[in-house]
Length: 155
Image 1 (cartoon, helix red, strand yellow):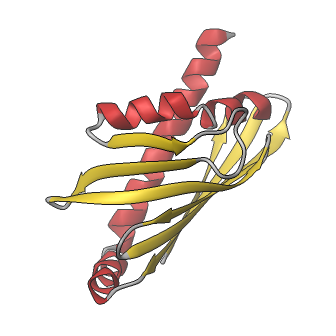
Image 2 (cartoon, rainbow, N blue to C red; image 1 turned 45 degrees about the horizontal axis):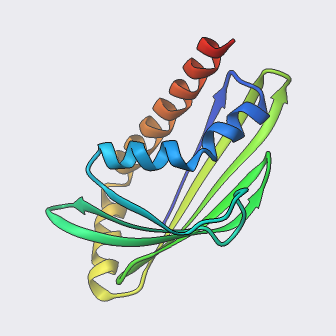
């Protein structure tokens, strides 16, 4: 099952990419929301092969997820592979410069179940696709607006 959304950001592509790839800030943001995030393999500067082990609560259960960056091409593309016991997910963040001060961010997540229970969960997501897609788009839009606000405060 694939989720896709696009958001236009009022900020240059280099700034947008630098904010999206500021992993320390993103890790702290997830931790404030109750997730455990540990970077188990680190690379400086960022490069493919960075790995995070995460744990978070979802639907009343503690879920564990391993996230690995598999592609890092500044300032346009990042790809991640997420794996858990029952589900795989490929995530792609692509940026396209629309003008000097405007960037389009495309975000795609492709869920692939590995177990029967995961297939049932993905099937229930398909039944609620409209609501799930709307929440995905709202969170992406909120992230884009926050990025724009940081850019405008900086300028």
